[in-house]
Picture (spheres, one colour):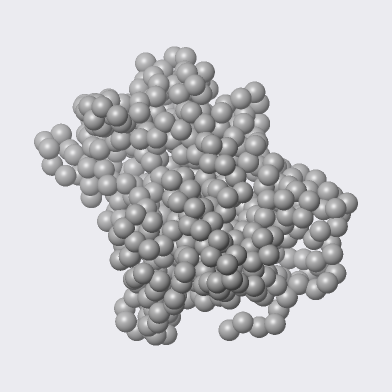
Length: 42
Length: 479
């Protein structure tokens, strides 16, 4: 069953706020790279 | 000099070949046998399927890469595998000439990608059926053309029904289908046609956002969030209807027949549909030294290669046994035969399977594509290097240890695009190591939607094509 769950206006704002998204881009890249590189040592 | 043969040049096979060529290519004979002479960057076929990327941007010729990496390339379709000691070889059919090729090996890596089993669902698929697929480049191109024709109809004012999801009760790769449905939504929005389309997500997942991996769970501000809630928000936000717990059983022109968990049978009408088929192993013949069929020692009934996993455990036990998942991906009977990517037989499903009252098993198969394929390809390559140099394997990585990152784009525009970034560790829950109810590292696992994901998806396309071309620094880029 579908419910009325949707993203809030604030969430949508941050999703497309360029400066914040640039910060997220850096953080996410660093996070993914760091954990993915650990795999190389297995 | 050792002879290593890799069958297949997709994410798994090509990754294996690159590492082998890099480590052994000058002193040993590394050969790739593939029925395709190009590498295809599969994740971007989603964009091909909506006409946002040219097909030629997603492929490159393999031979020049292999020439640089000291790897031989045989453009042939493998047909038979003869694994018995003393006379180990693969028989293939050369593409173009049809000539039979016999290639001997000391180590064999089976990584040919999946057989797209459209015939598993009557009426499914673009060749002999009524639905479309983005699982191969020709299919993605055909899907794009059909989608464009649909848009033309919508421009004339026609209202249409679009159904996207899985086309078999045991299908996998829900992530690719999810990415396609949100890209179609975004594209229609940009074209001003969204109000002309009723879009339905139809899937065999136990719940939304399961993706065949039992969902993704994260901890944010001390609260556990689940992908089911997240994807529900995405679909509600986009006005995409959804129907999960459903196995497609048959397709006719404009009609999809299905059964759900309750055993109800139903029909959904469509004007355009992209449904992922069931995946099976490639139908190679496995022949012993006396000409006998040795398939039972090498593959399961679906054609996936049996490796060092524990097979046959019932789901509740498997879910509590992380060590049941293979670590080194070689066959117990023929230890010099490895399987990588979708080719290896998983010990069972990751998501909870369900059999309805009509005895229909609705169970997403474990995804072994993308990052998982690449990691396994590297582990296999490094173990073959070990075996040749020291005689002992030192590398291992189970899917219960593996991290996976997945970026599901929602439009490719760098200004107003969007994407869901999913990180999970491990891919298969390990309830012994992570004692929470999900068996996952809730600190590392991550779920986020935003423009940054669109940038990452775009960056990954070019970064990975750089890596797969074996260009400067390719090893620094993780799988």
